[in-house]
Image (cartoon, rainbow, N blue to C red; front, side, top):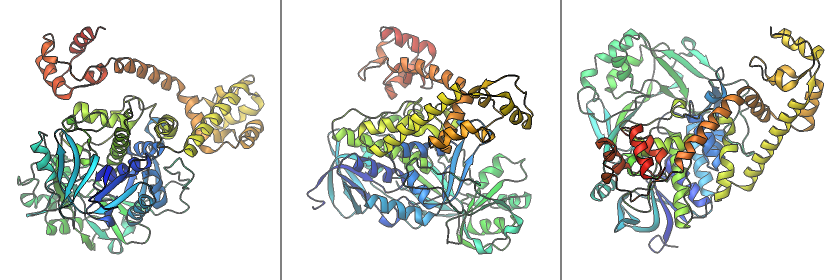
Length: 625
């Protein structure tokens, strides 16, 4: 069927992490989908670091997987190292992270997308949007094609009017070796959208054969690595590659400072905002002048390549400055560059112009996902892409939208933060942003989200059955622990070995197991428990669930109660036509912010910066509460 004669249900513009998840989600929801990308060879390319997950980001990847997205599966299939971060802290802070083989990651993504029904591909650059009044009806490409669609998802990454900076040199580009995208911003601004500029950067890539690893500290993966996906199509790593750690020093800092007058960041050529939590090396030594050293993580780009990603050395300084400075880092004395670091400026659209479905308020059936919304990071982009893809498909099918609340997912926190508070710097997810993080753990994402995804037709029955089995086995083991009394003669040797207070009588095992200093592995000599675990095929995942329940049930219950209070305010809806200018008791700032953002509920209104508790009380009176 010709592109000229086909009207698609969903067109996804851009083949990065957001676009790939968007295309997969809408196609798997049954929508006829077209993915348009500048380069089919670079689908889901890791433009920056070769890793997925990390603090809060790992929770997002688990949530994407629980919903039926592809990121977790692709990461598992292409991982070269796995680590569970923050394991010394409570389970709300545990965050999975995997180093990936960058080339295989993109290859696996393309393979999975090509095996997805209802999904077509087209390599071209979109340089215009087609509107019918306040609705979008298609896109225009550089080759002159006009392709029609019922919905469009823009996932343009850093390509919208992208500008690359290396020292005094500036040239157009979406990333190294690829041209920028023009025309889309101009069409949107003409429609009344507000746009802005942001920047991000990337470090040099170097030849690993030229490094001296004996001067660095080895950073191996976990001894017993886990995996991201809850499905059984992947398995844990059998072998891993190590990363390495080294540091900058005062000499490095002095060499970098000597080049500041030639840096686009300091001479005024870059005026847009960069990511606060992933600053460039020049930013670090300027803002933290008292620090004598900064960490440099030496990360391999894959199993078979010698290319190394120099994490922590993001820079846009001139090539000769980069070259001199990096050679003063221990282990880099004889380094050979594959390519130099650079900064990139690009257009974004403040996300307060979106609804919770990621549909724009100004134009119907038009969705934004990823860096176009002011976020940074593969995981943040991928989660938005998935949600936009789902909601575009639901819109075409004339079904209710799919929205995740703040107490249901990190993805819900991310989207609510963006559309309620906006962002003036690249937004990155942290556990501290989630007020219900004890509920939103990485271990229970499938229990939280797979049933919701199954209801809308995205998650498979096989995934749903696995969740039900996990819940049933978890409950069964908890009931056993509550019912089984362990004799003091059996348990006291265990307690004594841990230096814990002994018991003077038989006691229910759940009371013993709830002690924070003990874990399931300590009870391996209790024959009845061991027999129960074998008989019921209880795996490590179930044990972890039960252990978290035993030790943190009080905290979890408290957060559930707080979430219930939030949901009561969430249920007090505000009509989209509500005229805040008529509510004279509201402060001027509140009227201005509420009119601009148009919150859908009292709860969302309460999270808007500048809206005070007294303003909320006034609104509740007007809502009849």
